[in-house]
Amino acid sequence: MTTLADLRELIAARTDHKSDPDRPAAGYLLWDTLIAAGITPSINLSSAGRAISIDLPDGTSIWVTEQADVSHHPDDHEAWTALHHYDPADPLGPYHLIYEGPRNLGHTADTAACVDAISAWITAHTAVGALARHNAYVALPKGVPRDARRASWMIGYAKPGFNGRHPTTPTTRHTPTHLDRHLNTHTERRGACLACNWEGPARRHQNAAIEDALDHTHPGWRDLPTLPQSVGGRNATLLRAYRDATFPPGWFDTGGPLKVWTTTANDWHEHSKAPGGGYLIKVHRPAPAPAAHQQQTLL
Image (cartoon, rainbow, N blue to C red; front, side, top):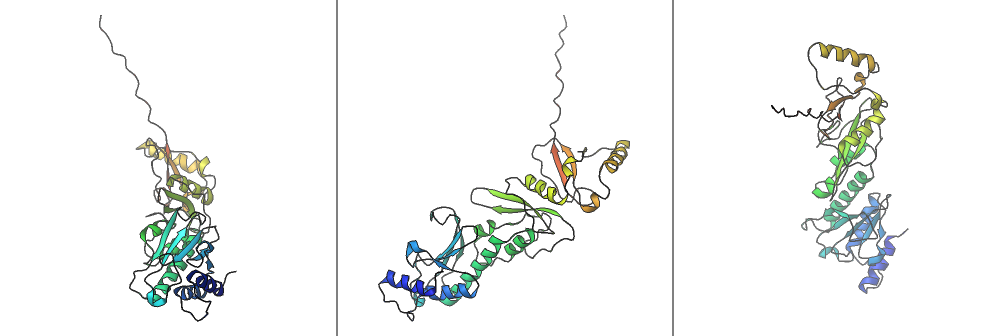
């Protein structure tokens, strides 16, 4: 494990100063503040004291510097920059800016704000489950840039459990929802549950994520019949009777989904539209082609 003494040695070697524990450097306070926040820093050996690294459990890494340097005097400090590199072996690869100081805080205040942003980002990045991820997203400080916020998992806008400003609370029964995150090139979704930490695989389309969530909360839903969206008159009474006879008892009381036919390809599933408040699942069935009519010729 690297230590502050190791950082001092690298800074001394980089700047041609003798190793002096009392020699001030902006990186010393940053290092100690990270340790105090329960974050284990390390040294980016490729830059010999010019960056402090934080290695995350998924193999990604956060680098913190000021213009590729941590050896400057605190009085000369302007602002820390913290980058989350998704491939630490490729500094030019994908990353997100998670903190950039405003240059008017001073060394001590900027270091505290930087570490707060890093701590909140690590919590959001390593959280598991819809509630933990969404509540960590809501708690991200204002210093985290918009693109980084969008890259953090959150409950999809207006989906079950969504609250854009306040923490959400668990439900008493397994309830399907889905998480979103917006990357530079695409948006990812994954099914999730509001009562436990279950999560599905990353998907491109929200319908697939919702269906994964229903596999968790309401197993067997795929085997239930698909019904017309709406019928009138006596047919409506017959349809309800058929539904009640074929669906498990209490299915809709638990928020179970209802599958209905649609002629629109990739029609979005709708929550709260099924009886009992569950998902209305749209199953695509193309409209029948009109019958071909041959032109009659009078002879």
